[in-house]
Length: 212
Image 1 (cartoon, rainbow, N blue to C red):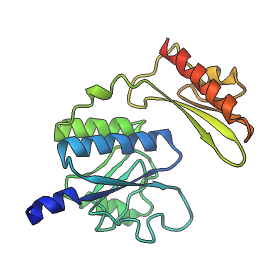
Image 2 (image 1 turned 30 degrees about the horizontal axis):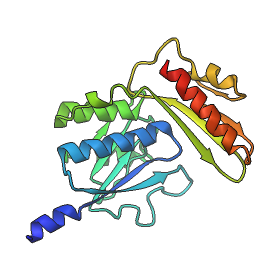
Image 3 (image 1 turned 180 degrees about the vertical axis):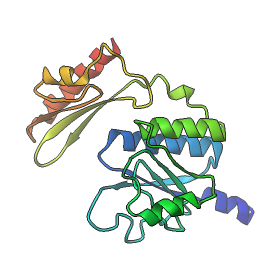
Image 4 (image 1 turned 90 degrees about the horizontal axis):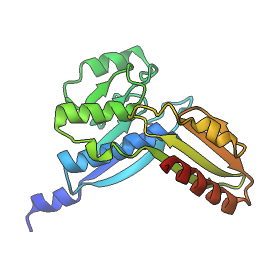
């Protein structure tokens, strides 16, 4: 076995994404598939959810991979950051960060605040610049998940953020029937911490309705 082949299998890719955000998680998933298909099929992925805070969000050795990626989150001037995709107006913490981004010629850092979704932005760039085919993911229209914590059981419902919305489906209205609410494309329903069975049942009912 050559050293080169051994290193290829051991390549670690750290993906930092906007935590507790459907668009952030979707962006991380799309990047993973794109990277495996177009960059390195044997890479191992490590994920880290990022949250906004008063101090610099990338302190403490966050970029510990062979390749380090940030999607749907703020820019970093760290020389260890190799890939970046974002669409937020507040993507840059300081004016010097903007200039650092403008001076980057790696061809791996992308920003466009005109996109409403980082997932759609990432899929578009990956297709146009790297030959990635997002079509196999085009039919992934709805995401329904259940989570549990000491304070509540939660059903989260979100639409595919890079696909045009179905005008006949309003997730907020659907969730309101179960005591929840939210927005047309992202909504949630909260139950008591001991109501996980009920939450799972509601999730199944919603998923069935969205498949109709």
